[in-house]
Image (cartoon, rainbow, N blue to C red):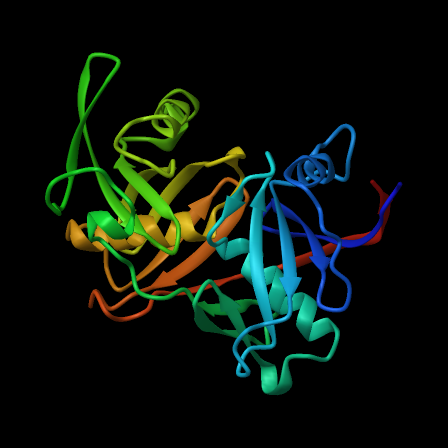
Amino acid sequence: MNVNIPFVKMHGLGNDFVLLDQRERQFGLSAAQIAQLADRRFGIGCDQVLSLETPNSAAAAVRYRVYNADGSSAEHCGNGVRCVARYLAGRGEAAAGKVLVEIGQQVFELRLLDDGLVRVDMGAPRFTPADIPLAVDAEADSYPLSFDGQALAFGAVSMGNPHAVFEVAATDSAPVAALGALLQDHALFPRRVNVGFMQVVSPEHIRLRVFERGAGETLACGTGACAAVAVGRRWRRLGAEVRVTLRGGELTIAWDGHRDHSLWMTGPATFVFEGNMDL
């Protein structure tokens, strides 16, 4: 039996999403059906599918869940959560330009700015290996890795999802596909990992490419931008506010460097089209 699915297509800096509002009606989609929605030839096409559900917390407007293009689940998506804020604002659900969204066991604040941008509380970075998770004995500023005969080092952090960050001389020549794919099945990362390649232009500006779990390289990654800034701050390479240039555009990430304080991400969210699809 076919299931008719109403959806909204949105993107944040070219990182694109199919948004499903399931607060009034649960579609009960399988991983294979989610992958079908995300397929760019046989479905709608997207990097991730976003699901809005009834929250557990009375303070939150919605509960927000993320699925990768291969149907697997993800813990968070920074570009996606800005699209959630813009979607809710368009429905009149963002009183005073602010909305609270439940992600996992936490509630985060999203602010709709006058210039059309969205500012998001992305939570505090978590560097403890068990929180990432990262299979090492002790926390460190960086961790060694051998790749293609080279001795490399990466920083690791969780922004609600796991990230490994490498500093590179130039993002254009970084081994994004090869190293990103290799780390997906590496024993260091029991839940796989998003891999960032960061070029430090100045303490206030970086260039970044990200290979995402279950999606491959995307045009932009919000949690990846936060992870890069968190690691760059820890390495004393970056300042408190950083402009992050991704292939799809720019984000601004602000963090004061205290481990228990939130990073704040500011960037756009764009409506593309809406429709219905039979699965």
